Length: 516
Image (cartoon, rainbow, N blue to C red; front, side, top):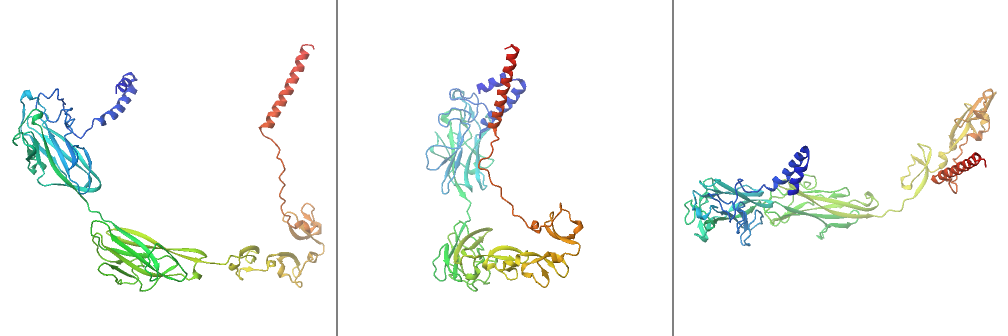
């Protein structure tokens, strides 16, 4: 703190203002306590010169008297806390310390001293209990403090009847009973040897107000659901069953109320996956009173409507069962088929799900690949043999091969499938399509064989060698054994060579200048 003050003093005005604001943000929260109001404080060496309560800061028994409300678990050691995490089944003391801090030699008596407590009846995870000490001639007239009860669950505080008492040197450890008006705005009068509202100044007249409370926790609603599967009729319930194609299996949904409240409209539902088919009239449910009940609607369990099995008290349970048939081998995919059945139970707006699985193996012969002509595209492709379709494919690869022929009817050069060649209609001698004064050439730009007038022949555009229209497969260039080096090493070598040449020229010039 001293160095912080020094920093503010030495800093420029604008900066010191900012530092002061930051310092205030650090210092002020440290001075915020549960007690109030802000008031003058005293020590046992220098007590007050007037009537005031709970303002001595070095009380050998409780420390700072301003922190005068505390909590302690009943049966625990003599330690009081401002914050207490409560436990179910436990009881707790709430304590208020009352001390007139006026010096003994002044003979100052506090008048109309009353104690009050605000004991909330709310249900929450944190409850604050506030204590107030009032005196008509004290300064201030009222002082207050609080303590907190906490939990991770909702609870409320119940006052334990007849536990209120006031202890001091006159009433002893047994204390004297206080009225429950202490929990109202009227409060309860205190005193030294009688409850007349008068308490002299000094330690010997100090006292304690105590009472007991018990936390009452909000009842929790909770339940469990477990889904099982078994071989049909075996009742050997497990999470996974290895079945054969076409086999029938049983499913079980098991519910239990593990909460603290009754649960109404407990409803089972089951969702079968593709590969499992519900067996008609197999659904039923039961509980301790009715072991086997048929649902009103046979399909309610699996069609999303659900089967309502009624209300259940804590620890009670119920179940639902059904059977399902595994798909035949032809309807399963090759390899491992994992069929996951999901069951659910809902009540009070809450829902839980669980799953059980059926595993089915289907052995399939290895796939055979074949090459076919795809008739739609005239391309040769590779497919699985089982996917062959005579309407789409041809195993005669020649159906995808094309040849250039002369159509003898039209005297035009055309491209046809090799299998469609008909010697009566076509000629493989393209010269047969040549008209007088025409020639057959390869058009170099399009790589197409065409017929043109002999006078239109252009050696730049045409070739009389029809082989020039055949596609030439691309040649993959050979990778050289060692790539030429063009990196920083070559640049350095060039720079070095340049430097050597420049040095030589400079040397020769200098020798000439010297006449050597």
